[in-house]
Image (cartoon, rainbow, N blue to C red; front, side, top):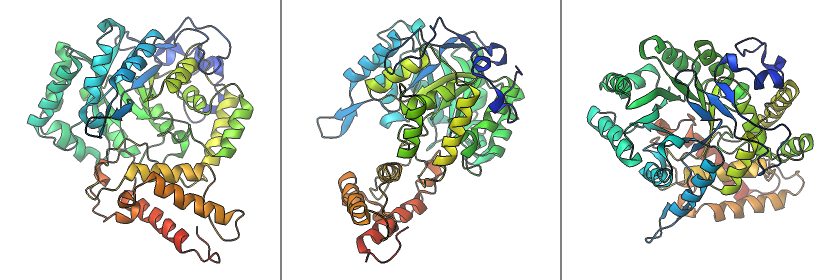
Length: 459
């Protein structure tokens, strides 16, 4: 087997080659049993990858701490449900998950604290902390240093295992220089790595090919210990390409440099867990005992350079399913990889919006529920509930269903019609979605549905 995965070899790789490709990068370590695990029922031990840079034995399933469960607080606003967080963390630790990824920007700044309360009930040696310098809104040296030091206080630790420059790539080199170089933070972080306060230093990437190339060109200067990319079977070859790099290209470049990779958005913001009905039927037909989302996690874990695959698991059934996928892990073979490429091509025809519900665009100054609107629209598209023209079968029923469900999901004052086009949301979107344009498109669709005379085409 060749040491690098490239475009020519992608569909030539066998499952066995992928599963035993220790020489290509992060080495798999597991006492997993063979056989196909049923969903929620682990059939072996958790799959681990060895970080070639420092020997860390990292669980292939990593916990993304951006979507902890919430409940209404005393004032009616949602707060983190700490009891449920503790239960999820305990299950994860008990089943071999040892990588936990958080950020000062998650859940209104409360993710680090809630994660620490849950995890610090366990021995520090049993898990790895990953957090970020999320200085989007204030990149001054003073604010950046305060955020960095606050993370240690919130996490109640004297060292951070994996520290990331958060969401770089957008804005190109200029944004990177502003957020990390001109304020002296790169120099500071490199010194922190030297003294051991940071064990591994890397970055999470959102951007186009040129932005990635520019950052990787700095590898000789900064020595990136790891890089976090968005990778799933849709973005492998069907990313925007202009705003966001194809994951295949990103993987290849990092693999060539020998840089371990952590994966975010293996479900593309939930899209690959809620696929169109026709795709779901094909996935179920091919593997009746597996969930739809498990296909995406098997894809993400099937590449040897991958250190861990992050999932923001809000509910226990999500956690148990993912644990089952990575316990007694079976990488995808060449036929399955080809099959997923067919599914990706099929899904490309559905006009969904690449929102991953990160909520970085919030709060909207005009009160618009941006992620809620996109989530509702994508759900209706994926379920085949879009009214398109008067000649469509069940047009009246589909029209009524969309309008009623839209009003139920999004309060009137928070709907797309109230977008003023201020564009404040644009700079914060890691997916580079043209948010005002998409809101106008959805609002125009809703207005056409309301005024439809049943003789004109809607879409």
